[in-house]
Image (cartoon, rainbow, N blue to C red):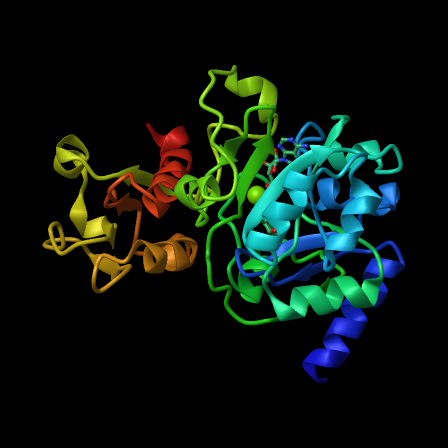
Length: 315
Ligand code: TXA
Ligand code: MG
């Protein structure tokens, strides 16, 4: 079987109303035909995802915005031109035809065009926009390899294996307001980059109203994970603990150390983070995972968001 055959197979499954997991540049997605509500329902079922958490719809052609957005505005095309294909999701007003199950009943829909040739070929071959959340069980570690999908979702109809994802963390999500844009989820595309295209909307808003699925706990390994600080380090039995390291500050005495980057490169940290969590989740000698914090600037904001959510249930 060649990759082309696999793309065709995955596309057939999606066309038939079944599910196919597929690679993107960020993480693997669990895809279904966005215009088939029964197929989309299977995503929620397989992932055990609550119905109030809306999905991102993936397209391979900017023209497809017209199928999803009630009134695609000029700013949207400017964003598309600058960042697509790429790890940026935009929330737009939804066309009536987009099934309510995709958007959890909201009047808006999240859209992105992934920067991954296999994903683009799949969407084109399937011939429909593809609704896809990350291909993990709800609340668990996101998948950056086909085997991570297999581990958590063995019941999926098909996994299109495109190797390891390169960005490693989910897309940045933005919302357009009258004044500019707001960030609903941080990712590798930073506020500073988007600001070059449209202004950042600084006005204060209630967080819960704009981001229904943004829960505090998320991305968690099934074992204890804590962000390193003096107290956490003092409390931890290092014989049974692993360190996800950013620098060489804390290495001594840990049973296992995974250094995320040789030269404090945050992009590299992001690319390796979920894979390190998967490896440590599987390591039977490890009871506790300690993650070294990174500077909260640029991509570091997204990394710290993920670490805090992973840690949330263990504090
Ligand atoms: O990189 C990514 O974005 C990956 C790959 C597969 O494309 N997808 C992904 O999907 O991370 P998911 O479902 O794990 O996260 C989507 C987030 C959810 O937190 C959801 O609440 C938010 O997008 N979202 C979706 N539609 C929305 C809407 N209409 N308004 C506000 N937030 C929305
Ligand atoms: Mg997810």
